Image (cartoon, rainbow, N blue to C red):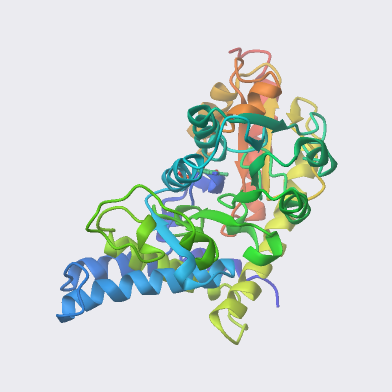
Length: 408
Ligand SMILES: Cc1ncc(COP(=O)(O)O)c(C=O)c1O
């Protein structure tokens, strides 16, 4: 059945303000059921986690519901879901924990396509342990991350491979399953950054071959919270730094302090919202998620094709990379105008796009574009429309025509 865009947009109250949000990669607008769930949880009597009294049981239930929801979203087990404030914080925690077991001469393999959240925590953990960082280079023209490069990078000292399932800079979807297979053959663990990929299609932890997979709910209509998933047995083997009196059970062992219970209610509501994206879908929540996200993916891909074709028709626009498999995310530069000026001009016309390096530090450094302002990013989400894509293209056309008069 065709994706019902009017129904979808009606679920996002913020869209009524009229901005064109082409920055899903920076964070999506929040779905109404999420807002309601957070508000309801804040209005309700909630105590800190305790089975002894009803408001305490309510917070226990909120934690359990958020874990169950994230598990359905990613094909994980609820006991393998660690919740935290951000993907960055969760990855730092994991890097410190794993890094404590590394020795001089051990190696980690990182990619220059990754957001810095899946780079710097590993670089710093490696430095602290005297381990060596080896880099998987992407193809500068296509933006692909060739799997065959990994064979040369991996060896018996490789402890960890960190790789993105979707580049937040240029959208590349690397063949993570093949990379993970090579990594596992060398005995290494695999940490996959799913922050940019998870909002754009069905995700399955086992199919990716990830030992650890991280996602952020604010990139898929939810609140500013994140989750890292792994098999419970994988978490069981790890000993993070933790408070003595806090629970040593998995996954609580990896969670610091008292969580934001209302935002956890929002995470569960966001997953339910995604599971309803295809109203004709039936079955378990996991099955409805697969159907809803696949429908949204097909819709987003049509918009991406329209955007890419439109950009290709503008001679003043240079699009970075041309990966075969990609999330609906495109970085570009406009001749004669810095990314920041382009962003401001678009912003003045009501279009919200990111500019700079969006923390994809290594990518822009490798491309030699960091010092000149990075790029502008158009990132499509399932509430965007063909008209919005056309508005962006028309604005860029206008800016290109004005380019002679504007500089900087
Ligand atoms: C691909 C990717 N990884 C990691 C992050 C960091 O996520 P968080 O803000 O939850 O730390 C982002 C944020 O933009 C991202 O796009």
